[in-house]
Structures are given as C-alpha cells and as structure tokens.
Image (cartoon, rainbow, N blue to C red; front, side, top):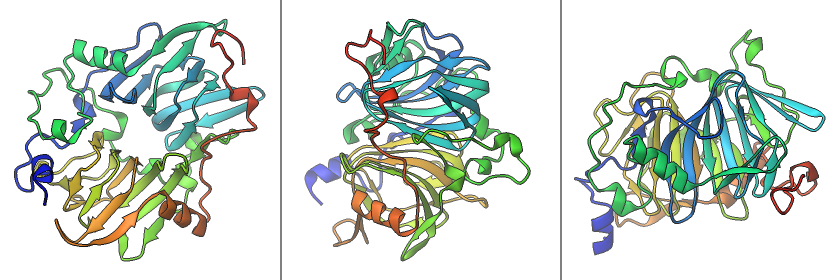
Length: 361
C-alpha cells in the first residue's frame, strides 16, 4: 500500500465518521422565497456545485417551476406528489424515482400531502416566478450557508476530510424522517390493497421502483440490484440495493452516496448496532470498504448513486477480482429487461429551457 493510501485509508483506526450523517437528527431548514418547503442539508461541493438534500413539502406546497442547470435525481420517500406538464399528469407516490437532465425547465411539483424527497442536484437550480421570470438561484453555496447558520456539519467531499474527527453532534430536538418511524418496505415493493399508493406515471422522467426487477450478480447472490439509470456520458449509475450478505472488499474509484431505507448496516468505524433508516453516506473517490454487511433481521435496503467504477479484491494489495462500471450495469439491466430512465430527452421540447432564463419555454 502506498504512503498516500495509508494516509487516506487507514485500515484499523479511521476516525471520523467515514462520510455518514444521521438525517433524523438534522433540523428542517426553511428555503427562503419558497413557501412550505424546507430541507435537511447533507453535502454541498464548492468544487463541482453538486449538493444533496432531503426536501419536505407541506401539504399543498410545491417545488416551484424551475430550470435545473445541471440536472437532478429525486426519490420520493413519503407522501405523494402531483406533476403536471402540458396535458399530462403524473402521480408520484413513495418509491417513485426520477431524473431530470441538465437545462430542463420543469413545471411545479405539488405535494398532495406532506411529502419528503431525497434530491441530488448536480448543480444550481433556478426558480422561476408566476411569470416564468427568474426568482432566485439555489446553489451549493446557499446549502453551505444554510447549514452553517443552523450548526450542521456537512459531510466532507474528500477522503482527507472524511478521516478528520467530526464536531460534536447537534443538540437540537431530533426531527426524524417518515421512513425512520416504521416499515419502509413499501418503497420497493407494493403493499396488497394499498390503492392510495399506486402511482400514475405519464412522464418518461419517472419510474415506479416497485416495478423494477431485482437483479443478482453471479457469486454475490445475497445482493440484489434495482438499476434505475445508467449514464454513458459520465458513467453515473442510480440504483436500489438489497444488501443481505457481506460485500467483498472494494475501492470506489469514483464517489458514491446512499440513503438507508430499511434494515441496519454495519461498516468499519460505524457503531456496533450499525446504521438504520435515514442515515445518508457519501463515499469520496478512493474510499475503501473491506466489509459491509446487514445487521438486522429484515432486508437491508438502500438507494444509491455510484459516480464511477467499483474495483473488488480479496484484501488490500491483492489482485483485482472484478470491476463494475456503467458498462456492466447497463448490460445487466438489458439482460433482465429493466427499463432504464432516459438520461436525455431529445424530443421533449416542453422541458427544454429557453435562453435567457426569463423567456418562456
């Protein structure tokens, strides 16, 4: 192992939290200028402009008409959303997942009831007013400012940041997510007779993750994957993982993030009881896991974005046994008939942003 690797990936005494944050103890922070919308802040990059938040919309509130300057993905955790674009209406219940490509102008997304959404923005979001003129821009610097004002320590974006001891935990009253209050299995499998939670997906930007088939890897049959999107442009993969075995040692050549939906996971440097629903991780490029495993009786399930290849081995310094990149994930999805959410919509003129922003689509 190189000297640099020893510095960034200490094997036995990593310190810090390895990029984990329990969102259940984070405060809900109101978003200026958007009534009924508040967020929990997890990560914001000053380098790339990307940020990850959990959004809460009060009943009847809406994410405003917006232009997503660098795209975004979203996963509905609780509640229900209505999305109307032109003549089509989509109903998005818990378990709905979507991807909006860069420079897309998106109509308001309204909460039929109080709703919580995991949102990963790949860059700034330009909110528009009722006249479709620019109202405000939400950037990673805004997320940093909001976190700082409320005493929230954001998850670091680098290996060197993740091995530094974190500050004292927040002393505020916990405000847990809905998924932390009970069984969240409905996010990935439909409950019998739960008609109220049946979605209506009219737009190709969204998918009901409950309808996506599970895929298993040869030699890793205790781990299942629901592959949602694969980008041939940047190699990003979005998926849901059912992690019921022990994942072999691997290194993240690109970053990754994931939110635990159900069960408990045990990782190096984590607490003996593991981490449960609502814990969000960011794995910076170069992060290594010698083992991670389920610590609960129920399935361990999490939603994840993988921003580069995973390299598997049998221990530090041993030969590579397997590489998983976007190529392998796409091949798996095609072999099992999984309908991936498109990364671009060349014929979707209704979503193309006009230039300048103050114009109409």
